[in-house]
Image 1 (tube, rainbow, N blue to C red):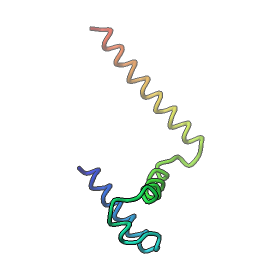
Image 2: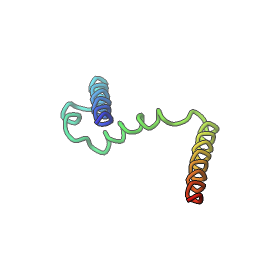
Image 3: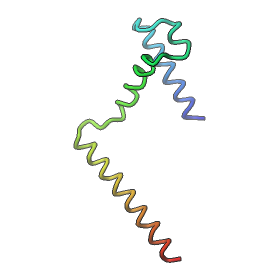
Image 4: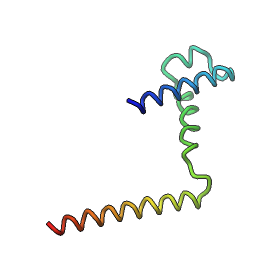
Amino acid sequence: MVERSEDIRTRDTFGQQRLREGRYTPGEIDRVWSAEIEADFEFPERRKNYPATATEAMQGATLDLYDRLVRHAGNAESLSKR
């Protein structure tokens, strides 16, 4: 429920910004968004979560993999002790 509320708030803010910029009309913003508007909305939202550099991306991926392997090894150990 909280995530949905945040999504609505973010979409409203985006819509108001684009209206002020004159990029879209109120009719375009106040109905189901076209693929163009969805793409315009989604890109900045995804972009803010991207790492700044390829090195940061690789470090993040390595840490994620390490974490998964450690969790998997712990699960395997606890299963073998049964």
